[in-house]
Image (tube, rainbow, N blue to C red; front, side, top):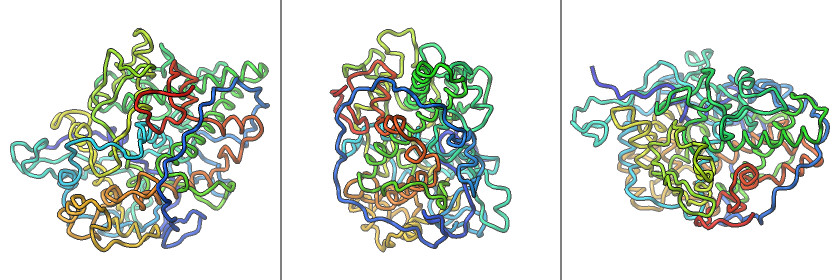
Length: 587
């Protein structure tokens, strides 16, 4: 029997892009909720770096209004946001499709049988020999917050149906002895059991689709309760004001097995411990919730624990939404890529498109560095120094409250993320996740690029050119129309032969970027459309549901302010999504 390189189901849950909600469609669901054969695209804006905000000190806590009515609160599982379509955006709904599925048999068999194996494509197109920094000076926070956001809006799980990735004979890392029989073990995503036989298979989402802080608060009642103290509206913490440990044994991903399950933190999402930067952001927003709860309780002593908890939760959700739409998306896409907000639209389905979750929103994998820095407030390196990315997965050991000067706190990782310029969004992937993901080859190691390609085939995604047409872009007729880089175009041609046979994730990453953003035209349209629907189809979006001092407070939220309010960091730029060379700035 051929030897299989094992890759656990939990690993796939930790890294797979979102698998999300709503309705199974034979035709795409346009942003206005109507079915059509194409989604309307937008013209790519001209290049311009977003302006940086001037530093503003964290305002003193304001007098809070009376408790929010239950009608203005997000449910734990996302149900009931849309009064006429209560399952839109809720746990367990199907992924949307903007393009009809391309299953080989029309309902479940993966497409791409004539294409090279996903590992062969990874070797040919994604091997990275030297770092290429982002030309727009985006910081590492672009991918750090991007992953944190990804874990708020979707999670697909895998079952037992195998879909292994063939390893080319003589692969340097996975078949060095040249057997030609090695495979990477991969299981297919779970899907709606009502689909996949007479109708195309539709994958499902196990968390809420809304930007509703579910990665902090949970998407089911049991997890949400396990995170609460039920006193003064606060969330549980552990020593050093970190997240609580998962001592009760709730479901938690732990694919690297560097530490015991009980030594992992408990967050709202099972992937909370995936890497040290993600742990830092998860912890940051637990602290922000408790900071808001303290202010609310102090100003409104008559409120109950539940009332304080829900008010603090509502503010933190609003802050996450403000940071996403006012900072993260403009940094990634450019200032004019997103349409302005014009209020809630009940006919807009906020569910996440398969083309987004399994294709476009996996762009951040190309931005990773081979190591994660640890930097003091003054910009110097901590004595512990950087940690190799391959050693940062599911590892809580770097967090040690006993270390002096916040060296074992979240501060050094957040400061590093703000200071470092991220790698360019392109086809190149560092070895730490292309060959050593969760271990060495043959000992748990895996290829993230190959997994992304294979997962797109598992989900029956249409080819790159077909998806371009569905999103209102012209089909390309030669490889140089995808990338002006001659080497990239030549590599694509050598790998695929035809521009109409390219996997979506590959083609989208290979595109030349828009003038003002850091994604190509196709991924820009997919991401902009998705987040416009998440906003416009959310009845509780902060600009639609908050008012008065709360709305003003949330509108001015920035990630920099949240960091400075909940850590010892003061030397950090106002817009942390653009690096400053480690020099800091503003307070």
